[in-house]
Image 1 (cartoon, rainbow over the protein chains, first blue to last red):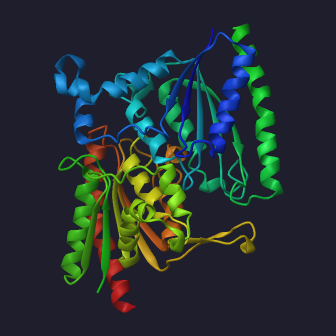
Image 2 (image 1 turned 120 degrees about the vertical axis):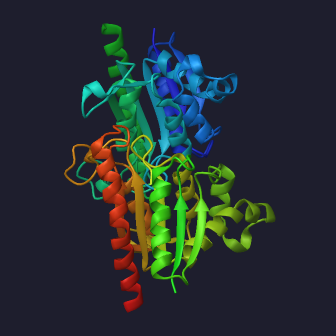
Length: 218
Length: 218
């Protein structure tokens, strides 16, 4: 049995292509493995509050020394991290906003990448003191880009701070394998966009089969 | 006379190194050109609300067709864009959080990069339909990194989604020249960190002189 954490980041509801794409992924997964558990976390509709100085101080206070107020400050972070802990596969449906994550998704990452909970810090490790606590998770990024050419070798490769940044962060959540499917050309609204939408939705069931098969073989 | 927009993004107040560094830049500038105007926008202390579907709909509605509610939805964005419009130099003091911008700073960018206000969109331009409305602005990024090696050729170059992402976004705010000074090794708290702090603060007056001299020569 597989647990999927489905994180959606678009500010848009029905009009969001990234939501449609990640919903298609979840639907396809449930057809292949109907007993899977889906945890839904809609940060687009309900952005986690942006971290404050009080939050940082609470996160850096050892658990045993935290005040009741600090424990309350960290409660949502605890809940969000627990969702990741439960997940075998993290599915992120997100638009590219201004060449990167929506602020809502970055706020989620800022709340879940947390010392002692999702990573440990030890200077005895030398110049690379951070290590993730969790391991073995798979990540699927399902995104929508207004422009195009954000992949390796693409004309806007160096302007892509979305998938690249998510991958950098996801390492600290125990992600060891990742896949991404993206829709491009949204702002152009032309035949290239239609083809990109068709290609992305066609790629979803194949990726689901590949991942679900790997899990049932494990 | 120069107008500087000073954007600060750290959730921390007195303990923030990026705030200390950008404050040092502003102080040095005022010593060189005391008649300058400073506009302060503390997004770390007061993060702009994360954009909503209603905000997106309002931003894409032609000005003449906007309802009073939509104009109210866009009021803060108008104000933030007006601050950029007034600025000759944009000074951003920001920490690196999880290898990129704090969500608060991304929320500011998501509120100020706005169709018809800071960029125009015209498919007649072909595959590059976006162009900035404003021009000739200078950007100074003053940042603090917990780790190190995020510059070109550095061991963590590919993990840097902070300065790179800010530069990509800043183009759409009319930025045509940029400079950055960063403090590294904060999490190591060792002699390398002390040296990095000293180097960064020493680099500030030189950069101020260079920029202020260029302005007085113009």
